[in-house]
Amino acid sequence: MSDVVITVRGESNARARAEEAAVRVTVSTDGPTRGPVVERAQGRAASVQDGLVAHLRSGEVSEWSSARVSVWSDRPWNNEGAQLPLVHHAAVELSATFTDAGALSWWLGDVAESDDVQVTAVEWRLSPTTRARVEREVAADAVHVAVERATAYADALGLASVSAVEIADAGLLGAHPEQPAPFAARMMAASGPAGGPSFSLQPPEIVVTSVVEGRFRAE
Image (cartoon, rainbow, N blue to C red; front, side, top):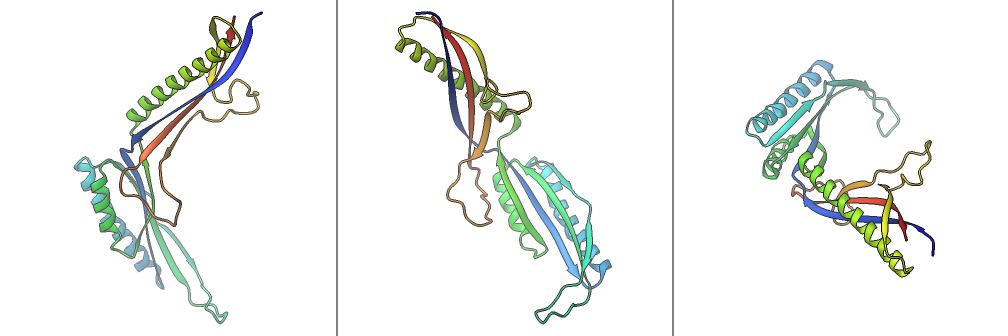
């Protein structure tokens, strides 16, 4: 039998406990007079910032940022179709990366006591160092899976040796120049059933998946 080209896909995944939480909160105020509305938003945002600075100094926050105050006005309508007096709004969005789940829980509990503050997102993730290490490990394991699969095909055909011709991230072997290939490494938090807008304050497991495609020559 002449040489045979075998094309296979290898996939691997690993779980790692989340180490960081990227959280976003919005301070929003409204009222009939623009000046007091803006002042109240700035004052409440400054209080939230003070808490973040304290956590940054203690090492429980790695970074934080605050956007400028957004101000706008509108004239709402009542149930009878009449337009009401002008209402002014002000909002400030703040974001931070917490490296301590306990500190995050306490901080969110503190800021949530104010009606002017809404938690808009809590996204758990791995630290850059851990993410790079786990991605390397699952990528290497995905290649091993591809080699084993190609070897199994070659054995079934009665061929003795297998050598790699091409190894690529998923989609790259058959991708056309004008069609970008999908990302091969994927990360997602292992979670339960989807529900309403709730946030986990306990670090979940992050599933890191790598998919590769390989082309091998067997003889």
